[in-house]
Image (tube, rainbow, N blue to C red):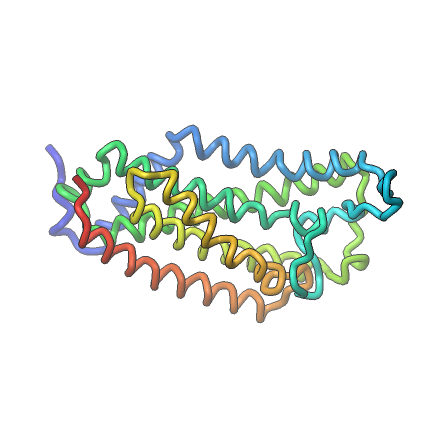
Length: 262
């Protein structure tokens, strides 16, 4: 006998939706693939680049490469993003991985008919959007933490320096940097959930649109999440993530209410 959650209060509906979404996520092989990639990616990047020569044999120019493990997390100073190896192949790549995972996870709900069923007999669309945002944010946190662990492992294997002074940071700055980056991920999650609701069964469309939107924000990430981040960066990223989650959550709710799920 199914339970009709529409007459329950908001807290009970959300709790039930979260239980369902977390269970479905952990039963999905994709989440383990994404978490595994998040762990292995920095190891491969740091170990492989350690074998690259420091000078281009043809032009004689210096080749940018990782010399410090913290370069895999970011750069200090908060300047504009450069186009060298250390700026492009770092933890910021995870924002796109998170966006793809969100689109795949939400798209599967519409492809399988699960979304239509849940809206019909169990929950409201606002509960669905909020639950998806929270669960996908939790997955993003796991991915960022595993990348950090992978960077530490990769840096040790590659023999890179762990000297914080060399990158103008300290332990507190690194913690603030990671917290800031995690809450910026909430922005990407909110964008991906909204565009996944737009694309629904057309996962390829939601992925392309989300990656395109992410590219517009990508250049700003080094400025708002530098290695020498402080309390101001944390507050700014938390506020920005919350605003995007609330604002785009409302947009997603409107989209779902005004479109057919059949």
